[in-house]
Length: 431
Image (cartoon, rainbow, N blue to C red):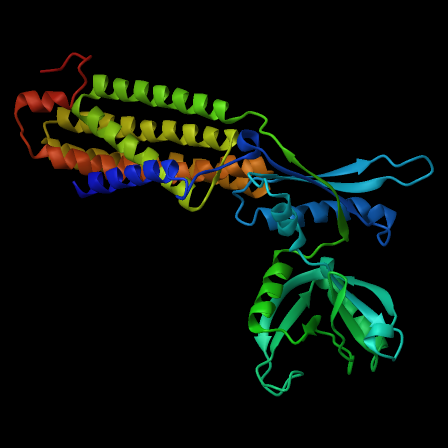
């Protein structure tokens, strides 16, 4: 009863949240609701020609990681080489499509939060305003990770515990940073973030460990935000916004509505078959399948997961796997009942015997989905994520929910007519 009450409350909450304009709503992909289309031009003048392709691939990965931190918003980020005018060079462009983000200012803010980190030598000994800087090729593309620490003594601001951003370079950056500091002891090394000087420390000794310290007089919150942004990904090459536009949905909400209706019809047919063939266990399985749908939708709402056509495919596929698990359990229960066991004992034994094949088949499904999520593009990630969640929820609904319902009614009666309700109505019962 408690399980049914929780499921009913969750279903009621899902309905209210979608009908209330101020409530929490599902997020839909670009193919269903449209979004923003941004075109960025990359400045690759400082990159060697043979490294441009790798630099643009790294830029694409950084922007996709920044806009899709949890792999659920399904942005489309792709590299495009635009033809230049006669006599000019081809321009490297980055196309970014953000589903559901109709505010272009918000869209550009999301992209712009990824910082461009650069280290340059100060060529003049005068003030920063009149100093000139020498590019040494050390940028955020060679960053391994950033972390926040606090100084244990009096810092630049005159107080102890000054926030410091520690930057660890990768192997290439570590070697470059060691050479740079070894050959320029006593000189100033300016640290630029998005083209602005945030710190200009003096190189007092060679630094072989590959760790730079950024002390820009930050507040703790500013330092934490900088560390977070740097860890999300520093841009390997500078970019500037070339054009923006809002785009309409390629499929539209009508397609979603038709898909939902088709899904409801399909689930209804499956439930009718389960009830017709398995009788009482089929009713319990239908209730468990309904709870499975509610739990899945709650995950989509609260993570949140962007609902796309690919994501719906993962949901439908995992629904079929949930039904398969119930069928396997029921067949095991029928075998135990034919051996003369009581309904309650048959349920316990049948679920126990069905668990191993259910576990193995679902484990392989989850493993496949993890590979798709790890190596796939944004749209494939959405399919894989919904499939993983669906498989896990289907295992819960089949093993826990269905078993609980069957055991709850198993103690009602052990009469012959009740036992027969647990056996198929379309097979000849053996005496």
